[in-house]
Image 1 (cartoon, rainbow, N blue to C red):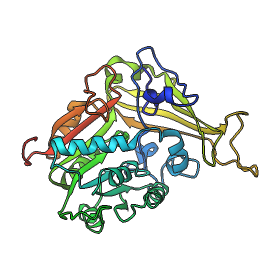
Image 2: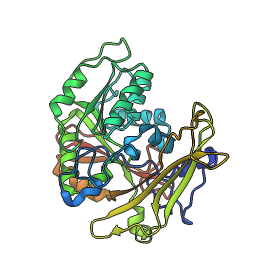
Image 3: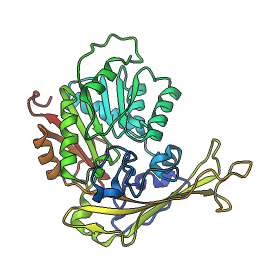
Length: 367
């Protein structure tokens, strides 16, 4: 089993050169967590500190994957986000208030899900919150490119300490793409923490703060949706015997045609603390010429991407832990899945990840 949050295992057959190492029982995984989503004030936790923490050892710089959205998207943008937007809308219909009308995406990064929900599941508005300046700029650019900037607000904020009133006000200023009348109410139908973002809440107090703010941001019958690494590796011992994971993707069109993106997500010997369930993964990214193997360069010979190598600290949560944290935040679990797909149960042997859907305790029972 590949001890990876990033390997596009389920998509490997569709990728050119999409090879990766894995253990015999390989459960395909998903996308690298978005670290630029919360700030840490603890000096002892410097390796997970966000860009706003000037003392951070791995401060987000020009060579960091989290400060380079184009590189991040090349490495991890292989998922079908329109399909996942449909999944989120179906959760709203089945377990929430009905039609999806508003979304708050915490740790949004390039705002993949916000833009997809607005453009494919409308009339809908979305607020994308992140604290990495480069990702915020890319999210705003994506909204403009998809001509939905009037329906997507990009907000700078820490997902453990954001202003609920401010994000709600940002929502009220948005206009759905459709001309259909839409009643404006406080709160969001969905608050999402996807792409493994919550894995960087290595401190349980931070995790509770995040869920409490998510709960406070909900409209009546609204849902909180978390996507996390499947805890299978905790129980089968794979994380104790870290093997690492690697894959590559080739760019087939556009200005970067011919480039090959080499991704290392975890390395043999990366430490896993069984007491805290925190793994420190070595992450490496490099973009080379697919034919020569040399650093990929523009026509004038300028190298476009500097190699990246850094340590990413993540917590592997179990379902009962999320349920308890949710309870402390006033939420209850209403559904679990093994993928961003309602047909894949959490207990399925090929479950890619752990998706948990929560709802405020006081809201009406499931539909």
